[in-house]
Length: 304
Ligand code: ADP
Image (cartoon, rainbow, N blue to C red; front, top):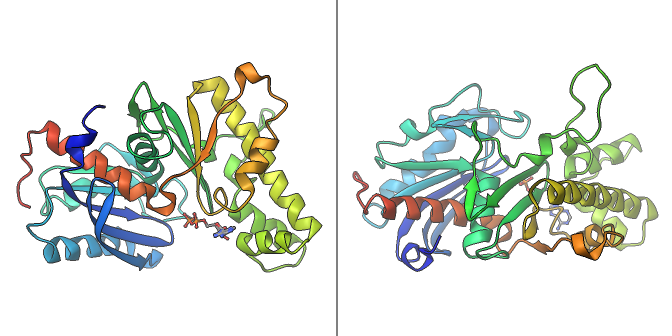
């Protein structure tokens, strides 16, 4: 899209509801003018998670022109569902768009990794490029920008690379999802098998301190993600793969992924870069999507 200059002049109320934290911002272009960060309380459910957005809409009344919400899970039309309830238990189909319609007539809602892909495409590491965004964190999510468009998919599931099966599972059904084999949760499970109650972050710290087992775990994860990148290359052939997330952005991790891809013929080599926005990618992307939609509607969002 060529409206980057124009969207930089639109102020959005934007929110990113994740498994561990909720971020609500007043955001103009890629600049957050005001931000509130809260922990996500899984037990209070979607109505509870929307409360900080309603509060911000009151406190910042008159200061924003449109509303965008990025969420962990599936946005199918105007409904929100969990894909992995362990991350965020939405509890069935929740009418996200209509639940926020008292703030704004026209609410833009997207999956958080899809929104992050858009941020990297509009302003970030892959500016104006066709790209795939991968977030390697507690789980694994993703988003696809193809031919300059954000792919949502028919049911909002495009780019959920964490759910694909790494191996065929005979005739017995679907294999285990990829995110069970490379993410922060996988690393912590591997440690638990050894009787260690430690997080992925601590495994990285142990590796830096020289622990060989920790190094092996991290390299295994990076090799698996490299394989995923290769599959993505053969499926979508993007101009760039952008990696984010607490694991993906940990020191040395992208180098390990790239090292695992060195044997690929240069004519098929892929460009892999770190996310420019890190944990802000989702909110920057959803604000850009809301601003674009607002401009396409001629700036006619009411009740703001
Ligand atoms: P979320 O999964 O809620 O989106 P993150 O993207 O921060 O959050 O990913 C969390 C995962 O990344 C956890 O497994 C955590 O242990 C790990 N992690 C967080 N920070 C670091 C770090 N600095 N180095 C290595 N791993 C990290």
